[in-house]
Amino acid sequence: MSGSRPVRVALIDNFEVSVAGVRSLLAPYSGRVALLDLGSAMNKPSSVDVILYEPVRQTPSSQAMLRDLVRASQKSAIVYSWRDKEGQVTGSFAAHLSKALPAADLVSAIESLHDGGDGGPSRRIPSDQGPLKVIRGTARRDYDLTPREAEILSLVTQGLTNSEIGGQLYLSINSVKTYIRAAYRKIEVTRRAQAVAWGMEHGLAPLAETDLVSS
Image 1: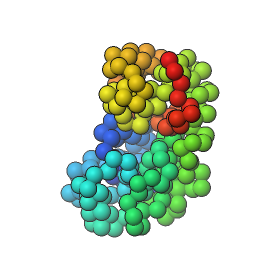
Image 2: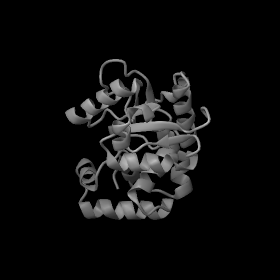
Image 3: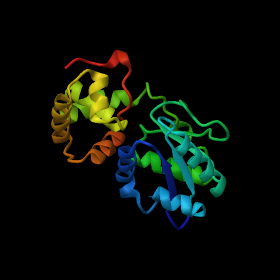
Image 4: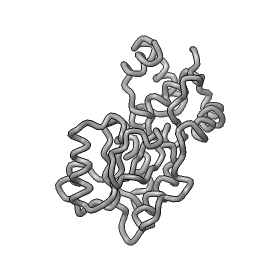
């Protein structure tokens, strides 16, 4: 643990379901890391210890919010994304944490960054490496997920909506919902935020085009 209180984290991520998933993921570690409400962080920048942001789908408004928070809090921003250094805001925002990190490793990395470290060399995990082996191997076997269910869970974990998943996989909305319901039953979750947290904990990462499978 870093100091006598939890490390206070602000997360700027336009995937709302991902924010909810991160909150759920970190909940068991509330004594070590606290995810702040973004509005509260913007109103009181001095309360922020670490700033994480997802560069994908950033808008001019959220980019301005990020810069304002960095300036006011005098803290560096750390990329927290599935994608390796894609779309980063230029400047001093160089550190990178992968969303494939399990909760315990993410918490340790945040504490390390807060204490002046770099998060550790193992914290920078390209999205096309280890995490895919986790969902294809242990997690898929342990939870009896079909290839399509695992694929859709991966997209849910990335924050895509049902409509976006259907468009990417050429499936109807009803088919997407059917796969999601089946996957949720197998991993024993009922809400999307829980599914995102499960996916992050089990290392679901974006699938490459060559890894896409037919149902």
